[in-house]
Length: 420
Image 1 (cartoon, rainbow, N blue to C red):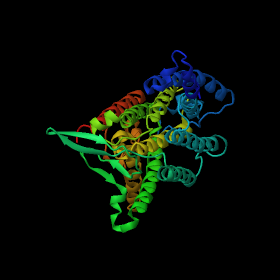
Image 2 (cartoon, one colour; image 1 turned 90 degrees about the vertical axis):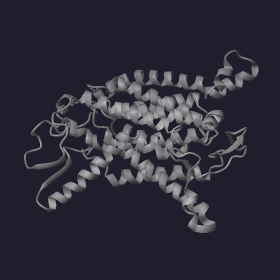
Image 3 (cartoon, rainbow, N blue to C red; image 1 turned 90 degrees about the horizontal axis):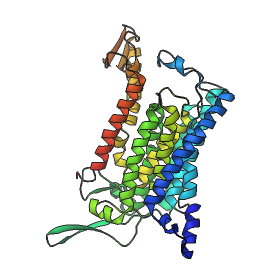
Image 4 (cartoon, one colour; image 1 turned 30 degrees about the vertical axis):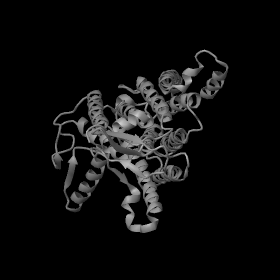
């Protein structure tokens, strides 16, 4: 809203109004505003939740040895992140931008889905909403995002082409915008993955089939990353810190994709309008960092599914919009390991149960729980394939080390733009 106001005032030569045309100015202002809102609103939110006894059920001591210390801590802290993100975007973003609208829709829809789950956990059953309903909600959002990117005339790219001048290769972008199902392949130069190309066996229907495949892939990504972030939300500051690092990485990728000169230099596709994603990214990062003020160990509030489901959805949708979804395994490496550990643990345990044995891949899943199991806690009859670490780490140390892993993997994701 303020963006449109100051752009209007620019016509009358109001000093300083031209600054609102710069992405860098609006992005940094958004970050500051988001930090202030999350820090200010967070304090009042926590007090209100405590007055209404809206806290998470005490955690199982066999899983979380520090669970007793966290009794009575309010949940649904994801509301702080969502408000601290949405308000600055409404004030400083271009609301006619299709990408901004998609991101705002994603965070609100999945935030409401997570809110419903948290509410059921507090008021009815500690197990919360049935998993099938959460999956349906995530799949529905993924379908809507994929179809919007397919059908919207504003979701376009400008393809890059290489020319040789004086023995030097120069990358230029077409002046014509096109709809495209291409996505960047990490470590591979001058070669994008085309969903339509994968469906070339469909003949004249390959373009439509490629878009259908794109929609299905988008749906899968939203569901996978959203559930991965949900699994990662098990320790104070863990999910919020990892997500802030990932979103900063996505903000960098969105910026270079929206800047025609940088996109040409890096030989990646130019995505007109994606500069508004930088505004959303920094608003989200500000909300996450401000939330860490209260969520860092020992936590004064938990984000709950209200925050974790929305976080994963936002990361997944943004990766698809900037055509960098193949970088998700790098950026979201920790989320991926959490999901794989749960799937592997479940299947190996079932195999062991059929044979009357207690088999485990790691000491406990999701994998971050394996680092806080005390010696002898599992019992001598449990066979663990990866029995590491031997001792029990402090929760703050586990969180910090997971952050470090995410920083390294996100740095690798960024340098793939040059290592090709």
